[in-house]
Image 1 (cartoon, rainbow, N blue to C red):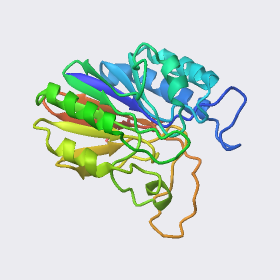
Image 2: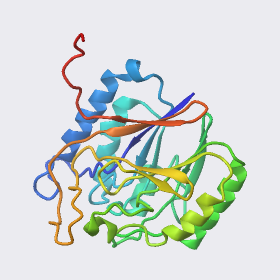
Image 3: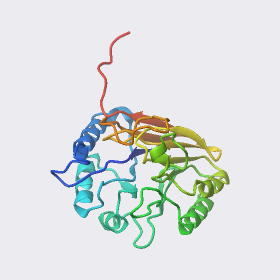
Image 4: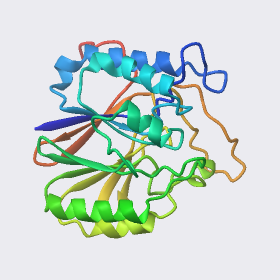
Length: 263
């Protein structure tokens, strides 16, 4: 059995700063890390931590340093991909042990029985994302090498529509190209992403795609054309992906409920 914890959209900023003047994102992440620590014996061994973009809100070196200190209590091998709020070169320096030294931040690692693949969708200075031709070629070659083994494929921008217009307007621009590659994979593959600060589960290219919640805020599921643009102050959790002859994904909330009580 292999287990990978996915945290997304933490939006960390330097100490003393609030995101948009309102969100204490560091406190939210600290509380989630503490929650995970308390239930480690309940959920079983975790092999790695995947962070699916927007680690920081500003792309500053100080923010990456703070992010690393906040997740340090988890004591897990950590693999990261950039989101639209990240800065590619600053992030590369902060995670030099796991990120490539040049060009796009695409990578692949074998974690237990899972082939974990990270794709760089960052278009610096833009909210939207895209997969470059080099990234698509990297994925094609990596899936060929995986040869039907279970794959967890991570990118920041969802390759599917959420129905939240202001987020779909800054989603992945070339999801059809990704769809073609995923559809051709002979094994079991899960696409995981972030960006929309909520958990969505949807069909994609004959496989399943899942977006992770954010620890610090959510976007209202409002399909109206004139829906307000903005975030809700609500803390959420993370996802645990397990492979044991098949994939299983469990949402871990930011807080435990009262109980358990006898029936």
